[in-house]
Image (cartoon, rainbow, N blue to C red):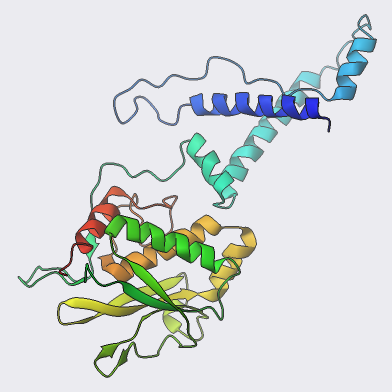
Length: 298
């Protein structure tokens, strides 16, 4: 494809994206009361290839023959089919940066909404202090990457950064480990670093079924000092094969939030909802809960 053709393709793509952004994603009024305005112009046609344009220039006076009776109908069927294919691709595509951008354009991105629902693993409902990590000491962790997918380092680093930014807690890597999921996180009274590991459901039966991760902290007194984040290795391998890096990060963020002290909620707009949804970032409730958990005693 020549440079001119590529420029026209990019121009057409930009125009198409502008039209997609104009598409309404709500019925009636938007949540803020604004009026939904449907697209009034037809989407731009894709540019024709260089050969097709040249042929048209060479035969400006060529007569246009009559169309077959079903030509327009076939064209309509093809157009509708292509549109449906794009929609299916957007819904079924991986949570790669491109797919996430498409979901955002179409209004399918996770919605933080106005809810601030959050739950703690161990609250102060009985009058005791809320158990939290020290706000001064870093959360030390080691990784057993034996069954981890190829891109585990980047995804784990990204998930940790999201939790750290939301809570203010610091995470410090202390390298790799060969510890299994049942290994104690204490040596006497001294806590070992948090273990992050990918294992098979055979190694940890609690990962059987639809569960792709289990995590939680352990405490000394009222302070969390260690814990585990155990992930389903085969399930993550499937995500890796499909290119679902965004889903891997979302699961890691969810489990790391458990490690910090958040529990599940019933609001689907929060990442701490117990099942997978379109929500791939922390919702307002998640963020509020993480903020409180990050304000533990020094």
